[in-house]
Length: 192
Image (cartoon, rainbow, N blue to C red; front, side, top):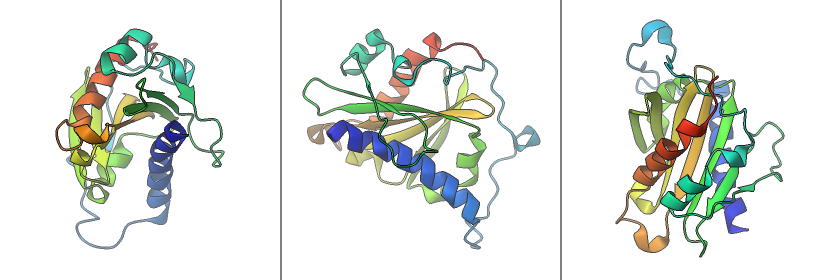
């Protein structure tokens, strides 16, 4: 049950972003700032991957799961009430204290996060294995959770959420765990 609630957080994050974009801006100058100039205002991915190709729970290979500290077999959240929500797979540590998840989202560009960066308490642009990525988390990540979104191709992102054990909150950066999870996993994903 705990895994289902945690994986729902990632799906809710994906759904809220979509709803927020559809509703329009707030009208404040800060909310209407443009992201840094990018050629054609689009995302360039030099080595595109198709994260929607494999079954979602295959995105984190067993050896990568072990290195992150979770069990090798993830669990698909197939009971989501939103039929448009992406499939999500979550993995937990043997004691259930650490939880990680992946959710590939077709038809979304990382540009959606660049355009809404003011909505996040923790926001950072960076690269993982040559792919554009962002940390886009509504809370302070040192509270124990972090959402990372990686552009696997121009019109596809993969979202990942990490929930740390409560005793690690404030001591361990969950975004570093998240980045490690992508770095270990992405080489196994098929080319687009």
